[in-house]
Amino acid sequence: MLSTVKVLGFVGLVLTSTTALASVTTASFGSVVDTGNNMNQFSVNVDNVTINVSGWSDTFNQGGHDDWIRRATDLDEYNGGWAMQNADEPNNYCGSNGHSADNFGSNCGGYRDYDFFLLEFSEKVTLTQATYGWVSEGNASQNQVSVAALDADTFSGDLFNMTWSGVQTNHTLASDYSQMENSSGYYTNFSNGNTSGVESTYWLIGALNTVFGGDYAMEGNDGMKLAGVSFTKGTPTSSTSVPEPSSIAIFALGLMGLLASNRKKSI
Image (cartoon, rainbow, N blue to C red; front, side, top):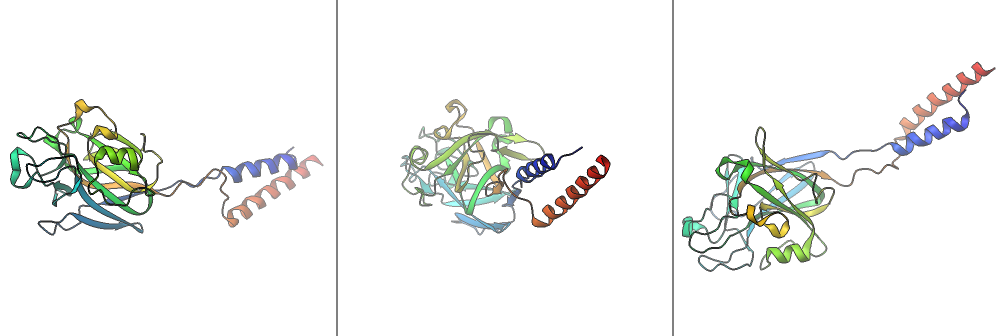
């Protein structure tokens, strides 16, 4: 026979174990129109979230490389993905490549430019995945991607005159790197690493830069065109969440019937 105490305990267990899981939202950048030369940012709206996307690289001007970050001079769309051209790369200057977001070095300067997309969300999100329209040499296995969640309390939204190491030290909540995968398209997952569950309005995605994690020996050949991202909004409801009142009422009626039935059997 079920006692009232046991049933009430069961009710409490059910009510406190109900959890609402956060759903994943996917934003595609393939429908954004390339407006031509000197386009260096764009915005998309999905699921009531606005995402501002801009390009940045640690370079100053042609032939005058330093470690200071500057905004990319141009973003270009190809095959649904976006590349950036930094200030060292116009007209394929010095053998560099302006057709991807990459960490390629100059053939005559002996340096590496690290290209990154800065994504500013209109609310805090957790980044779970990124997709790409193209990767360097079509080889997923040789491409790694860096990701970082920035601290909105210390980061103003502008990377101008910073360095990547300074961003990591002074403005980063969590960072990691991810191996490029290829299964019906190129993608990287961020849901199982250091940034898993981290929420922010500012996120960086770019060619592997080991100040954010990873092995320096893997740098120098990573390039991609960013086609979209997936993210979750807000924190999943905790295990102490309470169901809707109508659900509680239906559940309570069922338990009352169960109690009445057991009382009849015990008479």
